Each structure stands twice: as structure tokens, then as C-alpha cells.
Image (cartoon, rainbow, N blue to C red; front, side, top):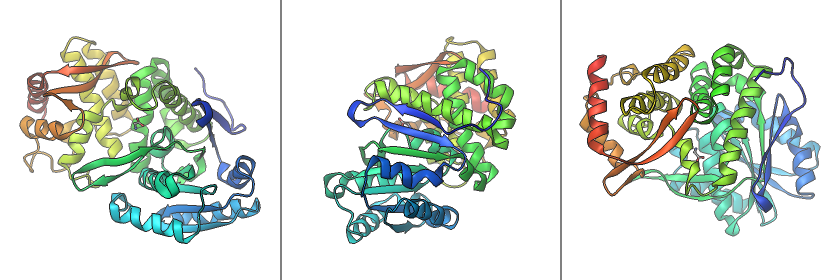
Length: 382
Ligand code: GLY
């Protein structure tokens, strides 16, 4: 697999969901085509752009201009940045603003932002007038390769993340790779963990390509577009065969059972971004697979080495303040995993590896086995 050598036309990835199929358009400056693409899909439509304050500073005006150029009217709904907006209060604010903006059944909501904005605006669109279509314009790497594709929308409950939501597919995804230039290096790196995940879970050749080309992906340009398109194609294929996560879609949770426990342990704060939790979780899943004899220890080392090479955390002990707060305790982590929705009748579901590039769903993992593994990991490096 080789990267294209120069920028080319935007890349189009099809999410094949029958009468709800849609395109993901990937490329530099494709935001400029937002209006013409929407006009082609929905002539005469009106729109409301939901975004957050941070993203609005950089990208609201260009998005509005792109719509205006195509003769599409828009109003803007700006929420606070961060998880705090993915709440009942945030949903109320967005929903009331959409009603006040007179967004009708045949109009469109545009979600301009990262995962929080996409999940919130998508859910508001799903319930407004029993369902209004929406367009995703993801502005973080994580949102471009994961959350904007596949139709998972929702908000958090005080009792847990993403406990309220709906499957509501967008009608179009516009992934402009130029908008990623305004991300901090740490945010970009965290999103990269989800890119690497597609290689580790289902495409060894892609992982090998990333091992050789990751510096170019970080620099931008054609390699970045290639990595995003390959990730979107992988996600689109899984979503097309299991939209509602009754089977294979769970493979996308590689690294997330351990990762969510670590995010919870650090209070879902800036101490550990979601993608950083996934990076550590993916390494733990690979090491656990090796401990169960499913892959060689050298395979787990390969996964860890690549993530470390790009500067992602790969050890529990890489999390700031981890030991001091008593989190370096296998029982505390097990308790956090037990709260996760991946537990059924006392058994844990894990996504494990039977090869690098081939993940499997393991539904009956004995908690004691996981506890012993975690204790061993914690003892190895302090
Ligand atoms: N982020 C996992 C999924 O969309 O299923």
C-alpha cells in the first residue's frame, strides 16, 4: 500500500446503508464545497450550524460563507466547548435554539466541531420534530475517523457517558483535512490512536504503512488524507454490515474497555484524552491477548512500539498522578470496568487480538483473569 504522492481531488468514501447511504468527502479545503454539496442533495433547504466557541473562532465564518455562496440560509448555535455541553442542559439549549430558528422537518442541521458537537447536534436532530437530517463537519482527527461516521449520537447522563442517544445517520460528512492544522499536537496525537486502531484491529498492511509513514501523516498533506480515508473506509465497511452493534461493530471498541476505565479513573479530564486512554487500552488488550496465548509477546510489543513512536502514552504509569491517587490498583480498575456497559452476567467482553490486524470479540472473560493480568502489569513498571 503506498500513499498518493501529491494532493489530488477530494476522496469520496461511501457508507453503504441502502436508502440511508451517504458519502464522506475527505480533502484539503473541502469545507468550501459545503454549500454546493448540500444544495445538490437538498435544493432549497435551510440550515442551522451547531458548533462550539473554540471551533466557531476558526471555522464558523468559512462554513457560513460556503453555505451563503450556494444561496443557503443558516443560523448559528454556539455551545461551550467540552463534555459539559453533552448534557440534558446542552441538549435543551440546542433543541430550543433549533426550534427558535424555525428549522423544519425538511431542513438540515450542520454539526461543525469535534465529537461532543457531533454527538450533541446529531441527537438534537434525531429528536427535533421526530427527526431532521444532519450533516457532519468534523473538525478533530478523532471525529473525522470515528465519531462523525456511523450514526451514533447522544448525550451523557450524570450516571454515565453516552447513556442517552439514538442511531441517526448523517446525510453527508465533510472531512476537511486543513481544519486539523489548528489542533494542538496533543489533540492530533490522541486522534491518531483511533487511526492506528483500524490497522491493529483489521488491516495489518495499513499498520505497516503507518509505521513507515506516520511522520508524513502528522505533517499533513497527501499521507494524512490517505490515513483518514483508509480509516473511514474501514469504519464504513464495519458500520455497513452491523449498523446497530449486534456483532462486528463491537470490534471498533478495541482498547476501549481498559481505556474507558482509565478515563473514568481520571475523571474524564484533560489528564487523559479519550484517544490517549484508547492507546493505553489498545496496548493492554494486545498484552492481555499475549498473556492468553492468542498472539506472541512480540506482536503486543509491535503495537506498543508504534504508539510510543508517535508519542502516545502506552503504560498505565504514563498517566500523570496515577500512582499517587491510588489508581495503580487492579481492584479499583476492575470496579470501574464493572460499571461499564460491556459487562454481562459477571463476565467481561473484551476485544482481543488473534493476530496483529485481526481482532475478535471475546465475550466470556473471567474477571479474575483480567485482575491477575492488571496486577502483573502494575508490578512490572512503577
Ligand atoms: N466509536 C465506535 C462506534 O462508532 O461504534
